[in-house]
Length: 156
Length: 263
Image (tube, rainbow over all chains, first blue to last red; front, side, top):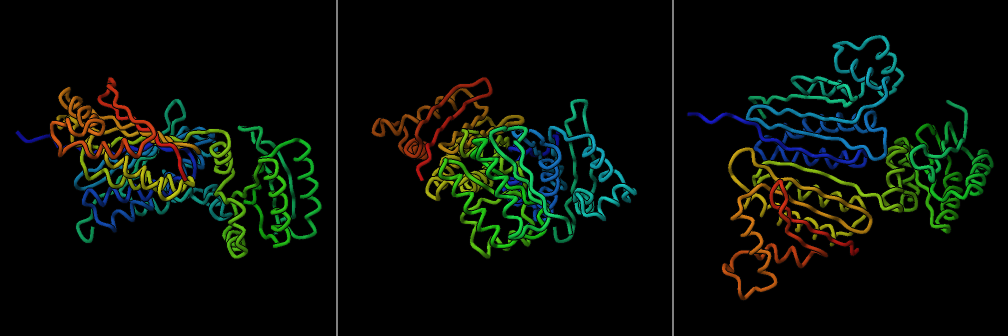
């Protein structure tokens, strides 16, 4: 009987402070390299970690004591990253929804981007590097961003 | 270009901290207005000030010089003045003048407020990890912990010792943890300005719990150890720690280490 394939689960919860994001980014990169993903794949994943964790801290951690949960499921051919924060203001959440779900930014988001204000929350680069990106906000306002990245055949 | 403005308010979350918001281009002509705001802050007996400079478009070195004076005056009352949200050009100016040795810089106001809480008010920053029970995960975790210790101002020696402790007890947790099912290692790392506390928890069999306890006793009775090749790692951890305990928890075996900051 073949053994059921299960992902390796790596989790970290850290205080909602931008000061820690660069260290978390580095940590996830090192974890991926330790699990036989290439440096190139790890670096590109780092960029995603940086964007989604920075957003979680900036827009989702309103209280000084708030923390961010980051989970990475490591499969042989892809990874799934899930970031959860306690949730921001309704305005920030609707901006996040727009940034994630709109293939083309709507007039409001475009105006924000043009004005250089929180432009697209940096999610354009995430969208470019990831296979998929989803946002979910539960009844308690907990905001989750899930990003999937597939290992590429060449170079990765 | 926006007009200069200055306004102070209490942090909504930590009322003892004052947020001094500066906007526009700040020049020598504006020093009087900022000074007046500082006088008000002093009268309110507030010693911790975050200068929010995110909306500052330009600042002259004379203003930075004045701010150094205000910081000194706060420091004499056991307080501090830090800068939050400097733009890239402003950060470059600060680095060029070398005043980053005087002011701490933060990316945003919340980071600065958290710093005051951590540095002066006993706030504890906690990191929780859970990772599969495999040795390959230990180096990234131990390096992360070392980076955090350095980032929080712990000395190189302390950071190295904390890293060594994490490495040893995580390796033990992997080695003696159950290899069956969805086994993982939980690490809790808490850091404040005086000490760190580390809890490493793994699910393991009763035999393994006994083995870990026996290994820990090796450092106290090295000549009586049944297996003299084992337990040296935990002996080292005990030597480097201020407090060391092995606890049985409902989730498995917990090794708890406290390390007081030395440098």
